[in-house]
Amino acid sequence: MPTRVVGEKLISMYIDVVEKTHHFLALPVFQQQLLRFWDRPTEAEDGWLALLFVIFFLGQEAHRAVSCVLIDLLPSVPRTEFLEVSQGFLHRTSLIAHPNLDIIRTLCLMVVAKQMVQMSCSAMDTSWCLTGLIVRIAMSMGLHSARVDDPRLGRAEQQMLNILWKSIMYLNLPTTPLDQKPMRLLCKYTAETRYLLLRASEALRISHPTTGEARQAIMLDILFRWLLLSVHRPFAHDECAPLRYPLSYWTCLDCALAILVQQRDLWGAPPDSSPVSRSFARLFWPDFLVASLTLSLYLLRADWPLDPPPSSGYSGMPARATLQTPCDRAGISGN
Image (tube, rainbow, N blue to C red; front, side):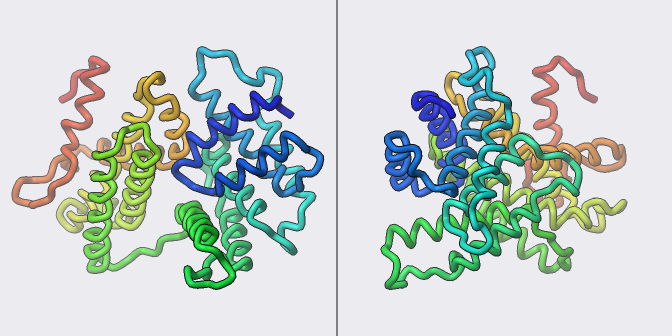
């Protein structure tokens, strides 16, 4: 168990990196529970302790990512100890028979922990089983059907439950199979998604880059572009895609480039001006990997164009200019 000073620091790191964008907790309530815990630790319930220790784990990982030159807060604690303690407390609860919000939040944060630390490229190592369980438990508690006019709930509680349900849906979406859609529907979906991307870009433009609102805009930008990549990929990989499926071809290229630009900006942010950017970027490394592999396919095909012809009317990210920027910084000459 960390000291109170160290524990508060870990919780603060978790809030800065994860909570400000994902909103799993009701922070005022959690802060009150935390004060009671520091005064009377033996009275805390197992479900809440499971939540606390997974927060410690995520805060520890975030601190390690931004403090490479600093002294570790917990040098003698194994990397996964907090997560294992959280699992131990979770096993002592009736998470299936009698779930509660603390259990739901703990499971959600375990998915985030896997994304941040333990995700692999194997399809067998994805979190779809866990996210599916979370969705079903949440639905059994009625989180999906709560209404603002429900007389049993106050407005603040209703808002908190709605936000939690949306956060659960966000976690579940990347693990949900996306069926191949007809091209006529893809045109409609692509236009609608691009409108949402413009809204996210506008929010990012008017926000300071280190605020929670700006990071939420980045999170939504990556999500929407991942969705476009997923639904257009079957068409974009056709050998004659530039001519047969130009919308899918250019959409996949544009989205892959945009996701990698987000990675470059987050990872390249100066630690003193944005200390949580690198930790925040680790939440999306599976998306960055997919974007990198997608772009690699384009680069490996010498007969595939990287810039749309002027007559196409397609206004996407200029691929050659975007790729040339990091090459120039590294002193690499391109053809």
